[in-house]
Image (cartoon, rainbow, N blue to C red):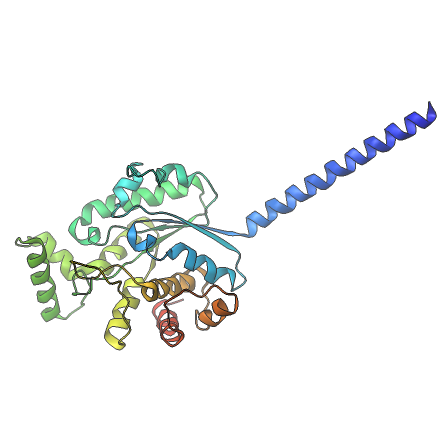
Length: 295
């Protein structure tokens, strides 16, 4: 009997020990999850092309910032559609309000359809602010980032400051593309450009601008590096792999506050350097991103 009790006692002790180890493992796993920076990209093809979220995730991980970055980015989607929980019929995406509830996001990135910040400025400001509020409802500490995209390669929607000649060219390009006269609101929006629209939403919502568009503008004005994908039957405007790398560098500096200079070498060493991006171009883009993000 005593022998049986001793065996039973040892079994209970072992079970308690195993339970304790499992609890410790679970706690450790929970702590590990807490240390991982969780990022959700909400947008469309400018996010989806070349997997911008994956590029940013790799940049952070090779820089000793454990991160997981995912996207919900149907082609052409507007923030209005994201907020309303609309999804395309292809079944590849979930309603954004549901996705927001799947993790305690550290960062939620909002990206409007590229022309929407100009052509539908009021709608952009309304639903951009609503999306920022929705992100913070899921987690009050979430930092909302506004993905400032770029003017198309023909100059449309770019911000030109005091350059009246380029403003006039931009208005003329818009009227030709859409085959109609720009009204006063469109003229004002075109003069302001994407940059101004995103800045207005940042002021309204308390979000942080990620100045990718400004970086693209500098690359266009200062280098011969091509940032646009080859697209048939239209002027290119989506990013190629180099353009996405440019965007990734700007996100990296915005999120970490650290210089992206030297990132390509780290990515190469880790076997995660993006294909079709030349090392010499990457070095130039890293420097521009470092200078564009004032942090």
